[in-house]
Image (tube, rainbow, N blue to C red):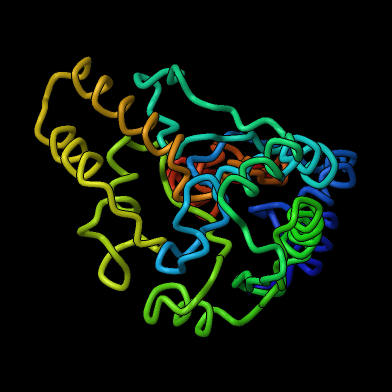
Length: 291
């Protein structure tokens, strides 16, 4: 496995034919290279700040709503991701037949609203909470520094707690021993029921993906209905209700869905960029290399 810097260098000289995902900071340089084609497509993944709802401090939805209002996601995407991501306010982001879900709060950046909600929730601004995440990625370090400051601005203090993958998994999944965690990835656009893995009561970690230990009997029942109904129109109505409930209750502070970006040598014919960034060989049987 090549380091990012080595891969970019070899891609630029023609020693490497394909790289993905490409760091957004390298896009301009790679796009200027006449040997290369750079392609960016929407991904099915979502980056989010997950609160552990077993912690009393995060059990009031007004606190979670306030934290979402406190973050200027649009500016972060523009400045750090050069526009290569989109804000999401639901994990139900596909497939196409779900369309645009009506009735969702867009949680546009509003520190005053955040402060008011925290006041209503009797928030103790003297407390601090740790954010667990896998260290070593400069892009993650950069946006978390902004997130930390913007939350501080409304009275939510967080400390950044990077770790290796093993310790991160222990905290977030095996032991559920964390305050907040950055969780990225997933194939949410594949089907609306993908979200059941993360929000049904039966899927608490460590056996499932419900990191936050969110539980709502109505949501549980709706997910069951969504899996048993065959009619697409009815499914859409059911998952729309789920999306609206989760959008209001904000079990996760949703950040964005990053684009999947790949760069490849123009001699590589047949490459099709995958939505899920690490699945670049999904159509490898269609590839060929010209001289």
